[in-house]
Length: 439
Ligand SMILES: Nc1nc2c(ncn2[C@@H]2O[C@H](COP(=O)(O)OP(=O)(O)O)[C@@H](O)[C@H]2O)c(=O)[nH]1
Ligand SMILES: [Mg+2]
Image (cartoon, rainbow, N blue to C red; front, side):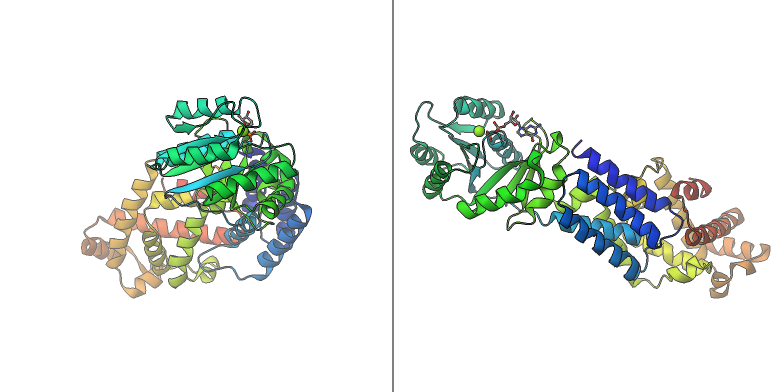
């Protein structure tokens, strides 16, 4: 896996947060300390780490917990947002006909990434063609030609000819009808004058839509220096970080780029042509945190729960009427199928295994419970204790259910009420709750 060391350290920090009794200053400080350690080990710049820590602490202790969210989720959300913000935005390379010029130092992964990019566009239904303008390194022509042949991608190169500019000119002419033209160039060991001159000459001839700088993740936070230097010399329109699968410094490389004027378009995660990913910071961070698609969940929670008058505070204090439960169910229904929600919950990603068929049962049960509640009076909804056996009979008849179903609903409500109290007191264990719910 990519950056699994950073990922597992961050996940450990979040797990600690989830299982902590109370969210107070000490808890937040502890979590921040763990996160700091993880990021520094991944070569993220110290200043960046410190600024981020400060933000997390301030926000976690000062910001009001949004409705529909418990204090833990609130802190997790802040951590997630702050991590996303140190990584910055991604560069979006559109899926349309264009010319792309690859630049970077020798060994950074330009040639490999050229073929990966060709494959990427090929899979999206665009016709790619590749030009080899590396006349500097022996074997460069054969390397790229072989990669392209394997992928069935059109290739142009002139083995033995050192005139890179001429090759690009002729290659572009030959590939006029292709959607995507990718030009692989030569690197050097450092950003030297002759490399800059060569890049400028090729640039003048091909007039690329995108100049993508390829950087090896192993350089860690030095990525910002390199990105800046290349940007100042010939200008870059995006960065590709390669070899994220093989270094512990990935966090440094990823975060350092956001300090420059450029941003990351793709990441390389292995040696095969398929090991290229479009870089989407939100998704990347959620995956790193082991949380499924937490962003979607948080957005949905904000949309549907915010507007509802779910009074979380009162509920946590133990006032949880059938009416509250009804509202909660409605909110859940609005959020989408149970299965989707459960998968998006942070706890799902933290190892709470939920059996596959549990979702269906829950969905059906919830629908039944709602029908039963529709047959109750306002008074009964607010004070379920009023519901004795004669009322149970009436409600069951009115809703077309058996008295057992009504009793089950009341039992479920009691359990949820206790769970709410439990959440206030500290530990709440999704797995336990689900088990009690008979799932
Ligand atoms: N593990 C891994 N290796 C990579 C990745 N990208 C490139 N490489 C390897 O890095 C080495 C140099 O790559 P190359 O494309 O020739 O670099 P160039 O000199 O910039 O063209 C090759 O052995 C590649 O297989 C990656 O994302 N993951
Ligand atoms: Mg090369």
